[in-house]
Length: 234
Image 1 (cartoon, helix red, strand yellow):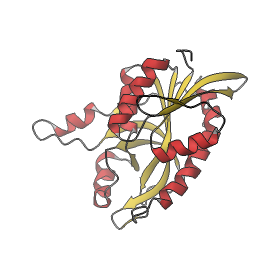
Image 2 (cartoon, rainbow, N blue to C red; image 1 turned 60 degrees about the vertical axis):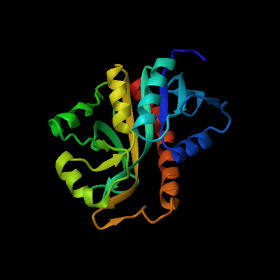
Image 3 (tube, rainbow, N blue to C red; image 1 turned 60 degrees about the horizontal axis):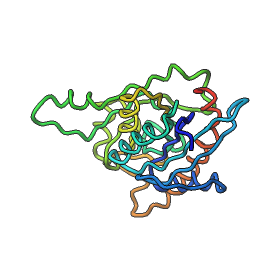
Image 4 (tube, rainbow, N blue to C red; image 1 turned 135 degrees about the vertical axis):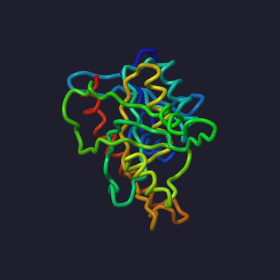
């Protein structure tokens, strides 16, 4: 495998990776310290592009580690994170795709210093000025919150008011932070699978069926548009 790669496609959650593997059944699977990976040449515009798909793992620790691993091993020109997120009820609907413009890790609790300074330290602005054209699918440009936890229903109003966000996930904050500190262009696309609000949380019913079903549709949507996104970026 050549060290230099056009793009690494980083996928975090197990269910998201399952559908990515299903989309490319003929690939050769390899192992990394974090999860499986496979090389794939994708037709992008009028030329083939070398890509690596990597299962980075769920949560900020695995996301940060696997992002650095991907950068060190393959030196990608572009890092793409495809996945899912939970939306804030009343602000966004399932199926909406977010083109992430800023990430913020919200589960940092600083009680000895300035809590806002601590939050700002792990907030990352994503420069997307290198995208050459209009998005190939309907998207909302939004900031995305991250934490090592699912959204808590009662906290949604505070998160909305404090951070001006409409959705949250587990990994984007770590991925964007590591990519920025390595000077690697980063594209984060997350599709909303379910919404959470003070009165309800449609996926918190003790089963994973709703999330799993919608994650399948979300990944199919994102993977179908991937070559066109790469055409805008490479």
